[in-house]
Amino acid sequence: MTFSNKVVWITGASSGIGEGLALALSKQNCKLILSARRRENLEAVKQLCQNPENIFILPFDLAEIDTMKAVVENGISAFGSVDMLINNGGISQRSLIVDTDISVDKKLMEVDYLGTVALTKALLPHFITNKSGHFVTVTSLMGKFGSPYRSGYCGAKHALHGFFDVLRMEHQKDNIKVILICPGFVNTNVAKNALVGDGTKQNSQDEATQNGLTVDAFTKQMLKAINNEKFEAYIGKKEVLGVYLKRYFPKFLHQFVMKSKVR
Image (tube, rainbow, N blue to C red; front, side):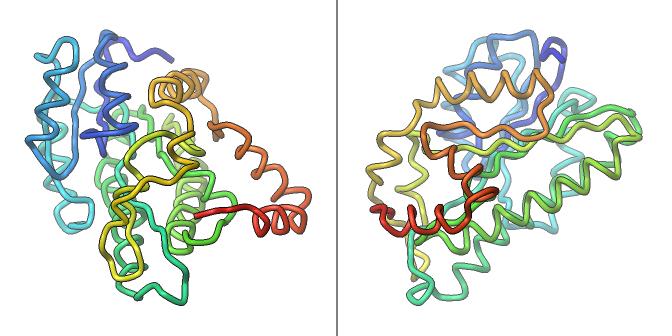
């Protein structure tokens, strides 16, 4: 596929991976819809992009799942159609299960899983009518295996894999493509914004996140995976090996993670 002459909608576009995608795609011959909660942050990203006249700002909150039909109507009206939705918005977590209030688990599911699913389902009829469309969902390597301090986050990301695998099966007949992107550590503010046990932000960087891929390096690999219409893409450094260890040597992966200094 090519991004030329396509309308691409990116959630979580105000920073990190979403901002990187916006900057990269603005250089190609496509139109962009940028979404996140804060309009001012999206406007700042828009001004950094090339061809800002081809960018539409659409702020909304993924946690407000009852608003998604109206959000999608606004998104479609921006350029008359949507060709690709990149589900990138979400939040992370850094707290032990025993220290985590159930409200935090609920918030993670509402934003990372239900919000993404609600937006996808609201846009799905548009893709069915057009007999064409791409859902690109940014999950995580934590959607393939687990790690301490991320129980609720892992649960939400695992759930996304279950939902989107079925979506791909049910709508292959409608020429709808589903791609799952699984990042490892990427040097963004995801750790700083991660929720701790009481629901507040961690407000500090993880060493592993700090030493992860740059946003630019990650974005290039992600766009290549989309172009190649991968079912799943695992993008990171040595942490990607965890996917294969989980599949073939789950006890070894467990022992390895337990010996690691994860936080």
